[in-house]
Image (cartoon, rainbow, N blue to C red; front, side, top):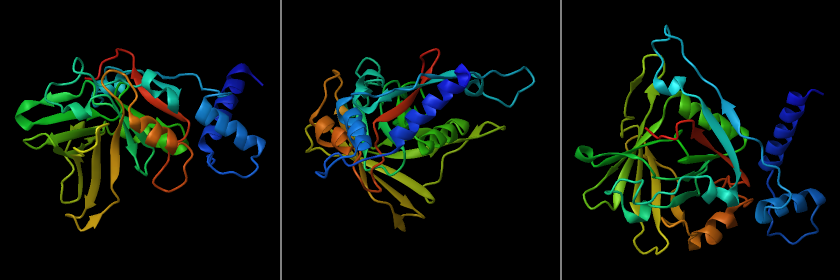
Length: 278
């Protein structure tokens, strides 16, 4: 086997191991495979983290329909779920617009999100005062993480292809916000806001939660259909310290069964070569 083929095989095997999940709270006699998985998932022992994946992109002068994002190379950086605070951007007062509420600083876990995106950071979001809105790239520099499984890889590629941005439009007291999807149509490079009559994301602050959290809900067809709620839980604060939600919800979710939990021990995040969000 050639060296590139061997590296590809190792990466595939590692991702396959990460995709398989076990309940590490059960008390039966564990198989060697389950023991190895739980040692890695909860203790970070014996884990094999894949090498960074560099994606080179370039555009010729005649490819007039492509945007700057289409032509910029980027890297997908893999990391252990319990090492997230060393790989994701931590939102602070220095790198986050002053208008953003304190409870959205730090790093947040999308607890109960049935899709394969897990962590979000509001660092370096673009604030538009006249709209009272913060724009965030879901494919941007160290701000949005994905499970290192086929579904997570597909989700990231789809979001990057459509240059998917969220517009967080806050109310006057900054205690709630609409999260408006703003994709871009490929080739013509025209972005548009998804109408709220078709799909609406809403979030509001849980003021009683000292560690910091926001409830996220989704409605379809002018509110006729409502999806289950989930939580934006702050797992790292603006000082880089872990909150009570780190052990209580984030670490506790690794390998937990249930359709609203997809968290495994391996994730990835995009790292742009220039290190800039916009």
